[in-house]
Amino acid sequence: MFLTGFADEASIDFKKQIEVTKRLGWSHIEARCINGKNLASLSDEEFEEVEQQLAESGISINCFGSGVANGGRDPRKEADFEASCKELTDAIPRMQKLGIKMIRGMSFALAQGEQFDSPELEAIIFRKVKTLVSICEDNGIIYGHENCSTYGGQSFKHTLKLLEAINSPAFTLIFDTGNPVFTFRRIGNPPYPIQSSWEFYRKVKPFISYLHIKDGCTEINEEAGGLKNMKCTFPGEGCGDVRAIVTDLIRTGYDGGFSMEPHIGMFYQSAAYGLKENDFIKQRKIDVYYEYGRRFEQLYKECKANVEAEKAEAALWAKPV
Image: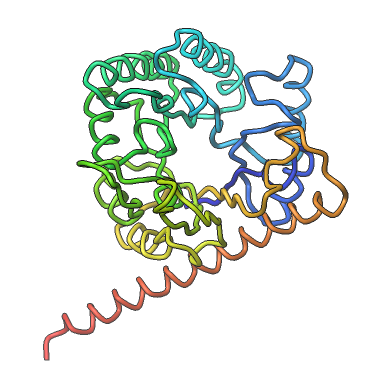
């Protein structure tokens, strides 16, 4: 088991990302925004500087948190597909140089003005994601699909259909504990309820290879038809079933990564979106990310202790009288 995170939520400055990671005592970063760019869009000179910073610090990037096939990319627009292909092919040589084995990808935005999962549109989505995964497979990279706001995140059934259609050893799941809390469960007919993180997790568990730790709460806005009062929380304090999921993973021998994605506060990605940050905001972001990591460590410790207590009790009852 290892701990990592989207350290860009602590700072847009990659040097600061490394500093807070080392302060936590961790060895990994899930790289999304690096000095205002991503791994694929850095210039050669900028990439060399990042490579040197990693080598000198002893920190490594375990996953590239890309924008490939994300919620800003329309499945019907070839330009959006080509942009995803370019981001992927530009990133792969750099991933290989840094020893990064996984890229976080998604499954395109929900089409507007039509049924997002019609058979015709699903065929387009599956074909395009399959092409992206094939590129990864040819280059020894794993395409980790996150259950975000794109096609595959709309319910566990959509994720399972995607898995069946892609059917590649290079295609696996990154399960985000918090995303179901902020997404409708689009199974059957509307009105749709909010998803259950626990249900989603249980249905796709055999295909999960990596976790994003996020938590929060929201409510259905009955009048407007959307969601309201959306708020991210520290792990274990929201409706994302974080404690139950982590306990179940420990109980069944999961030995992969847990990646922190706090999303706490309105400024968590402010610099990445071009907003100015004063010194207070900059320090607050670092402090929140650090505290989030420490709180998850404590949650994990408690979950592990509970599992060990369960095993001890089971062993006691198994002894002959």
